[in-house]
Amino acid sequence: MHAHPSLPALEPLEQRFCLSAAPTGLSPAQVRHAYGFDRIVFSRNGKALRSNGSGQTIAIVDAYDDPNIANDLRVFDRTFHLSDTDWRGKFALTKVMQKGTRPNKDWALEISLDVEWAHAIAPKAHILLVEARSPTVPDLLRAIDYARSQKGVVAVSMSWGGDESPFETFYDNHLTTPPGHIGGYGIKGGVTFVTSSGDTGAPASWPAVSPNVLAVGGTTLTLGPGNTWQNEVAWAGSGGGLSVFEPVTTAAPDVAYNADPATGYSVYCSYQAGAGGPWSTVGGTSAGAPQWASLIALVDQGRALKGLGSLDIQQTLRAIYNVPSSDFHDIVQGSNGFLAGPGFDLVTGRGSPIANRLVPGIIHFTQTRNVKTRALSKTSTPSLLGNPVLS
Image 1 (cartoon, rainbow, N blue to C red):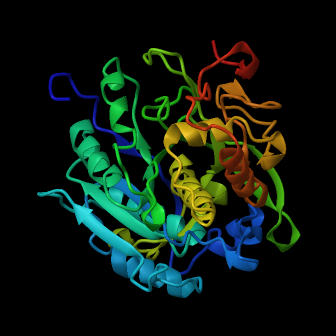
Image 2: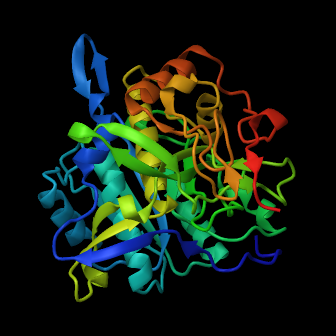
């Protein structure tokens, strides 16, 4: 790693809409219902079980330190009536940091978003927050290496990115499962790496264009009566496009999630609190990455109930690109420089999740097929490309 020049320092990809004394953005219950998370039910020995991430650990890699994150998560949980303990009854968050890591207000908001919303979607999973000393590539890669090697980790969420570089291919091997990895519930299995695609439109950022990640693009979500899903259009800020430097041209994003700050999420961050208060309404594709990581944790919970290990990234990508289109909300309107349209596109990938279909769909696909074969997944083909509208 040290023999090659580094990419520039990478940036968090959240966008704040407002500050307030009370929540003004979307709540966990609204999002869980809109995307169907609250309608997923597992069963074991004829007994219904909640899909809550039990037995799984989600790692979140960010830069710098949020010194208040543990207390902020407790406030978030009290506000939205969530448990702050994992399946073992222990506090749901563990924080580790590299030596010399200092607090940073901008990254504190990113950390609060990532931790609180990963927990909101998989409330009984454990959250492992790994704080890198700086947002430089070497420090972030060391944090990823730590996260992916920890027993129980099934997904690593990375809500940051930067411009592509010819040196990025040297770093893609960090986005793989270590040999002999032990995933959720002590079962040997893999790690899925999830990242945001960028917040400035086309092109996509790295690591989103890596063939070893599930990249999440952005949408604008409209809720209907009773917080049902009503409509989604592509968000103009969604990063997307074809890689310039990967040896096999890859496309991003793979999937999508609500990201528009105007339809953003309620986040409690006391360390960055301003005159308006500690609550922010936050958007950006970084909001989707931890929530998709939680979706993967739900899949791995369901697999563990069948005695199966957690998925690695290539298994996840193969499933994402092979389950029926009816498992997704297909986003057909909007642009980031590429037009959204039917099927896969370079703004929203395959679309946003219909979680009550997608989670069991991935479990079924990976249970009944040989998922060890490397997927084409992110490899671009003429039939997968959106229509460019930029010169």
